[in-house]
Image (tube, rainbow, N blue to C red; front, side):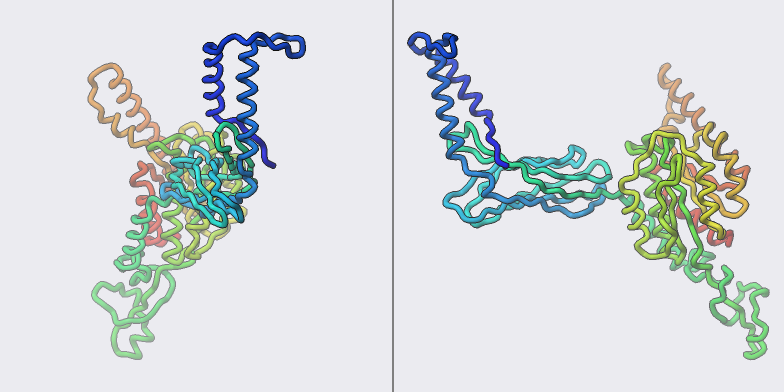
Length: 447
């Protein structure tokens, strides 16, 4: 449906003509519906209405133009994307100038969501803008408004086009380079589990070879030794197809901002690091996200695109401002994860929540599984702990930082006492340390 609109230029013209009344000679009054108006005022308004009527009549119809919005279905936070609009026109006699406006959320970081295009007959015109999203999630677009103006630019016609599309902004994998480096080390070094087929470690039989000076006598295969007349040892490879499950807290504890982003963003990066390592080494990776209930489940898999599947599943996950139910999460996991696995609980070391809700639930997990609690610490705490005291403010900052550091250390000690490994690292080392811990646990055969 096409509707008329009044431009800003019309308002300027009205002001100018209104000012001109002061310089026109008095032509008497005009009675309209029993009310007497200044004749000059009536004359000016009639002129303005005549100009507007002529302008809207001569304005080309927006229905002559069709518009499409083009963009990728998904992009990654921090990498940006391109969005384009295609204006297509069929037959006609003259070029149409169209103003186009789209619905783009401010957090998409578009330089502009409006543009003006000249569309000749039987042609297509494209306008493009770069998006720089500042948050992840699902962005849904709908209406595109196209306006055409009359020759005077006072009034025109507009039409709203229904053009629904969706852009998904996925979480970034900031630790991609570190994950690739760790995976290469694990495949190449052949030291303990850091080789994909570590000599002498693991319990899966791989092959036979001649005994070397560093081999243990318990690895000797006596039957093969008797056949060859040489000491032959069995070579075992690292167990594969083991399971790592991330338990991602999406409650209030993960809403706090560290390095300008919520804690959950760093946790997602750590989860993708684990997915890259585990699937690269033949293990399976799964994930449960929970707050008061377990609301997201990614089945364990060793497919190479498991990391991408995690990003696709979690892109629209944001912390809920509720206290997470650890007991419900533990019950849910135990019912679905019966085989021994490495469970990585990504949460914050909040003393009260850990003491009242998490610690009572952990014994059920550690009886069967290897449990790691992975938390992101605030690097500002370390900075403030070393702050030189020069005034009252710096004294309070340092005291508060030291107290916070000791509080987190107490919580970590309580978790360690029940058999849990604890990581409390700043964002820049969080994913790397988490990946190294997985490799260490795997190398020692605790899975």
